[in-house]
Amino acid sequence: MVLVPEVVDAVAPIPVLAAGGIGRGRQVAASLALGAEGVWCGSVWLTTEEAETSTVVRDKFLAATSSDTVRSRTLTGKPARMLRTAWTEEWDRADTPDPLGMPLQTALVADTQRRIAKAADRPGAQARELSTYFVGQIVGSMDRVRPAGSVVLDLVEEFIDTMQRLDAITAASD
Image (cartoon, rainbow, N blue to C red; front, top):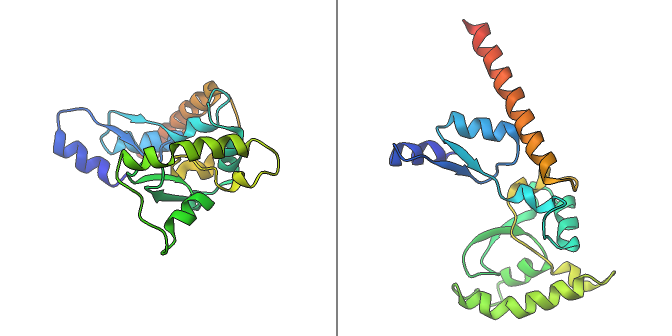
């Protein structure tokens, strides 16, 4: 949220979409208040019924808190926020090599990641510990599987409630 007004000011009059940690109506309202013309929601869709997220990773998301993520280069070679798992922990050890740059890291680990995902589908498989995926800190508020339409309705309803609350504050100060 800190960068939104800076970007808005720097690129005016070009419209700006705020992104990062937006999955609730209050966050949409805050983004608009900071000057954004709209928002880009990402992680909030990963636990919807329509998502292609694997069951293992989805269940990890549902159990995670906002502090269960880490910025890591281990899947692509570029820093990206993802779920902290045994995979990211092993790559982060002092005695392991640094990830390669993009696209070499992806080429290095893609087959291994496919094999991990396949093995993790078996109940009790230790590969589950290695399963990870990209997700933002908003993962802490992703607490159930629901239809994408329900996510949209909740976003809109909370946005409206927030705007009404702000209107009431403004009216009370007049």
